[in-house]
Image (cartoon, rainbow, N blue to C red; front, side, top):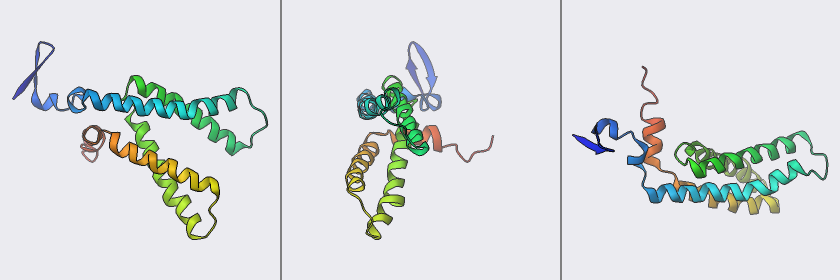
Length: 152
């Protein structure tokens, strides 16, 4: 079986791996919205801290702020190239899940929760839910996992 694409015929097996055949325009636009939301929520605070520091940061805080500033720019690129930047959404999903399991839950179980941890928990839950709904899982499977264990 074949399909027609821009006046050429493509075998169906090859057409199946083309991103534009796997992800709807609506999904791509929703992904762009999530990338833009991520950019806005991270860029201003982190870049202003880097460009206009008010105090000397310790090493770990400086690394953290620098990471989030860079992450904001990668999200901005995701607005333009949503499928190429799906790994950024996967990173966001994984780090928020890991934070809940490895940081929040042990702190809660030992009675060491802080107000900041409680408020960040809801940021993480919202991010996890959005990522689970918005990430094009069929595309992720076909692009990253389908041939993962195949040796060429």
